Length: 370
Image (cartoon, rainbow, N blue to C red; front, side, top):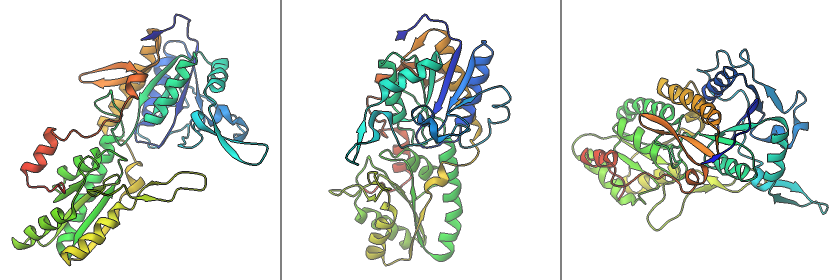
């Protein structure tokens, strides 16, 4: 682990990437823990935009984080600092004299600018944010990462905060869809977030006793799903619930992508409707699609996500106080420990195909499309 013996008097906190329930809880725990050690705290607006493009913020790109500023925010969704999944300092879009825009690595400049204002940084985010944190650490900035993503796909930690809230909401939605699907003898195809990992789809689908669950780790064959629906019809269960992770894809096929915003790459999306179209053709049933999308990101964090977020925020400050840097705090039950940032960003954490949860679903007769 990298260490630094310089005393800490002032720290910065940033939140990057997609929002997730629990971000404000991390901020509160980190700020209160730091203030109790006599440190000052500032927050960086919108990821690192508050440092790289401070002119965007008339009130300033850095926000003083006082006890009053973080009071009463533990239960709030979103982030009081703002966040962004654009303008990565690893490839910052930079206008050129000829009018073109090219990506430029500005992490060295960013590390220098942050270092002029504070002694250390707590970077809260997912895999992209942890890669940025690792780069800033290599440029000499004292950094501790806090893992955040509803997708639960960050390696090195058993859980990321935000995941349990997303699963709880998705499960509630699936519960509600059971009754309307049964009333109309319909097949409901429900698309959920998760990027290239199937943690949300698998967990919510099994918790809500879905009939089929399609995840990126298991390329699917719609014939298998149609067979499951037909089996249910034969026993008088004339409705079905099919959960589809946004990164799921058919055997021999590709991920479903939709056009991104101007200047951005395509993003995952649309697989739910493609599955629905295929099932309409193969089953002849009334098939409807529900895309939960960003509903999974919003709202109040469930108690366990709040607790994990508070533990992570306090642990990040303890880690700095113990003179460690270049690490990410991580849940290793029952403890919160830390792992090197390069280890945390080495690979995506996919659903293990031999895990007990998958086996539970198979034992219950749930189809995974294989």
